[in-house]
Length: 111
Length: 116
Image: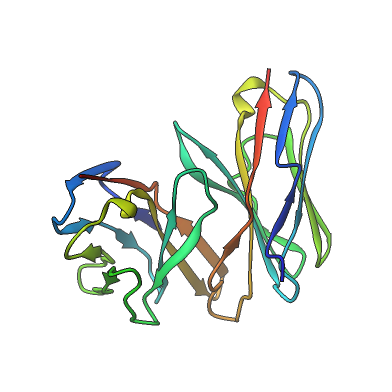
């Protein structure tokens, strides 16, 4: 089955600690992976996409095709990183397009 | 560009009434998505369109829900009749899709629906 799994519903860390938000996917083709972020009562916005391979706000994510993972990492969490994070997959096959979002992980960074 | 525009921003209605949510995607985008967000269920993809054609509506919860995209610059999500459990924030998003990816989605501000 095609799916995106974010195993942690809530992740709580202290300011300055490393953070890793997990994302695993199941997809038969070659998908494109994204991380979206939603700050409190705001619209979702793109944080990262794997094809750009850039670091945004100190966050990085590497696509591991062997482990079918796209974990989001930041070495030193800040309080302003507290938000909801969604991992998403966009894929295409001869049966058409597919778009799948994970259930989201709420990150809480405590002072 | 003003981004994705949704209206109304807030809607309060009584159970049984018809509700229509509206979305104007970013000009030039060819894919449009409707999502529902609740505390209990998180973010759910309801339906998406590519070039005004519905591609996947498997996320639409019931026949009470319907969505249309009559042209490239407008879409509606209708709930008829509405029920209290439909209370949620409904997001619209658009993107520029290629033949191999839906690309980056740009989200609207959402419509907060309350059904009493």
